Amino acid sequence: MGQWDVFLSPYKQAVEELKIKLKGMRSQFNIVGANSPIEFVTGRVKPLASIYDKSLEKGIVFEPSQQLVKELQDIAGLRIMCQFVDDIATVTELIRQREDFTIVEEKDYITHSKPSGYRSHHMIVEYPVETIHGKQVVLAEIQIRTLAMNFWASIEHSLNYKYKGAFPEEIQARLQSAAEAAFRLDEEMSQIRNEIQEAQVYFNEVKEAPSVKLHAEKDKGGSL
Ligand code: 0O2
Ligand code: 0O2
Image (cartoon, rainbow, N blue to C red; front, side, top):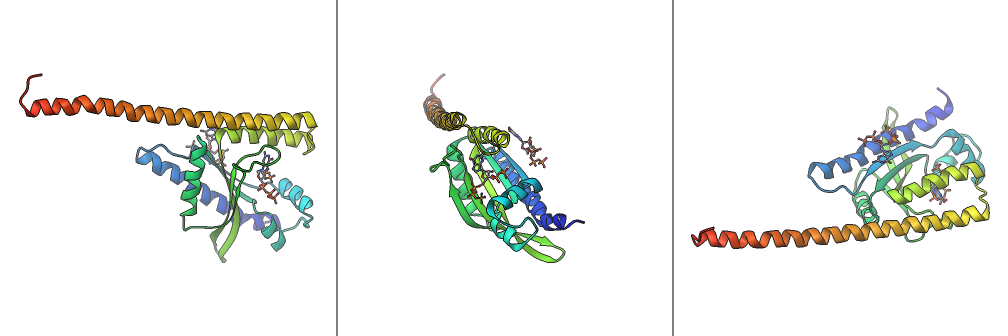
């Protein structure tokens, strides 16, 4: 086994375990018949080529080391996709309450989007992996975002690859404006959801009212 395989092995385990745990949250909402704030979960171990690029960017020697462990906080990466912006806060709170890992940092790129237009909520966690050599704590990054934020980030990420990070100004401006459009779409969808929920409450109240009257009539022995 190469030295990178050995180095990345606890990260692989962390990603697999965290994927199961986060998907578990989704299933638990479904089991009780509640709307899940989690649409889907993905996970990956950072490919070696990306570890190489990031090491270069940060001026770290490209070799398994404690410095790499400390400075590359997203070697293990999990992504949680939500339908609505409000769901992000719900999921974030659920994650804060968990006792199987420790949150060491949070970055709110939802209220403070990045200059590129990028939005997501990031949580860096310390996750304990049980190995045959004992417990090994690894860092993992959990990104929580809406489907619209994910759509934008995936496309921007592919374009970034094509332009090697140096976007022509015009493309950069269009991407920023597309990010704002995606955010407006998120806000509009949240409003539509709120209106549907209010309508459902109203509809249920209206449905309830005659049935109450109906029972009262029955109790009095009234005919129907
Ligand atoms: P289910 O029952 O559909 O949730 P892995 O779990 O290892 O196979 P990984 O590494 O988590 O896969 O990432 P991958 O393969 O990109 O996708 C993870 C899960 O997210 C898969 O479901 C995909 O079907 C789901 N997924 C990916 N893109 C979308 C999307 O745009 N919309 C929705 N709703 N789901 C998506 P699972 O885990 O195989 O099972
Ligand atoms: P990949 O391919 O997803 O692994 P860091 O650079 O990590 O030391 P920083 O900049 O504070 O420090 O990290 P940040 O920005 O909190 O998180 C980095 C990750 O967030 C990125 O990982 C992306 O996944 C995502 N991200 C951040 N900014 C952008 C952006 O402008 N566009 C897109 N599409 N994604 C972004 P990697 O390693 O860059 O990429």
